Image 1 (spheres, rainbow, N blue to C red):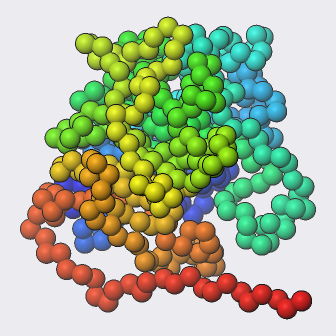
Image 2 (cartoon, helix red, strand yellow; image 1 turned 90 degrees about the vertical axis):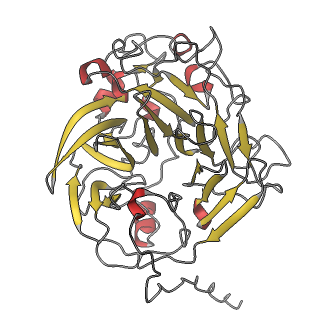
Image 3 (cartoon, rainbow, N blue to C red; image 1 turned 120 degrees about the horizontal axis):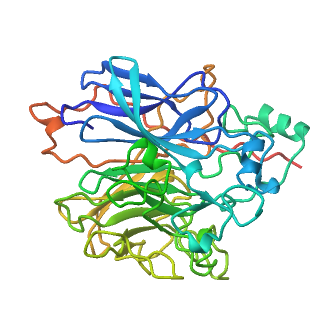
Length: 436
């Protein structure tokens, strides 16, 4: 929400080609308080597609996540293992800074590509060869999730006919092309840095935005002198060979962000850890494991000059969160995907338990002082007009933001309930069991 009361939002572009994998949008919009489209910008074609998240900078520019297509030949030449490379190629992520222009225009004024900051220890004859443990500032192109076991085209067609293929451009050949699946981005104006999250890598990252676009392709330049290389990363040091499965701390996380100035904990970071260690969907190591989620507050170690510190041979710190929230009984707070959290002025933390559509506010000692369960779903339909199945996303919400009463966008506005109110959605009953 902007200070003038307008909002920015992702929009599902009706005709973006090629890409599939969740969080698809391909379009960005700005909508006025009285529901007028102020800006409607398409960022999708056969080479790239905006997805998941964006953040608005103080100058009004937009930092957006996008996939970019790389062929099988490009992937293999960069050192990607053949068994990790789908027939359709791979879609590593990039970040673009867009200057809105007019009603439909947008100019990319800065960009960063993960493709420019790779390393691999698989093939010494290919590009990017080196030891990941010696270069934590680079991304191992072979890190991440393995490809799912292949199914036949007949099986795929059956699933498609049963409406069990979730993404509209999904094919057998592009299953697994979305290798990093960035799902969150935020900007810190004071530091001129960007943080983002990759649940497929189970890591969060920070890069320097003070570079030029040319410097962002390199390993030098910018305020921190490291070009577009990672300044800091956290959550899964296996990705740069300085940890193992017992030291992994993030699992499928969402919504990384800095705590804003003026808030308790300012400068620290918050991240929603969907499957912490010990959860069934994370490491499956403990026989007494269960499904639960956690919110972490992290304090990245920095020196007196503000540089992120990493000791030789060790992973980036911190060793553990500064603060964390889990439900007192563990079980009552869990979302397997989406979700988020941010700090409030009163020191409490506002949490969105995304899968269930539950918002709640917790104190620093973990006491719940307010909560709300979303009863709505809306008229969700596919682009061809067919109704979308409510299962398993009946009430789910990707992210939620607490807007304080003194927000400038609310100044002088009369807030009254919508009339008539939308109808609460009720899940249909399960079909009756067939008699034997």
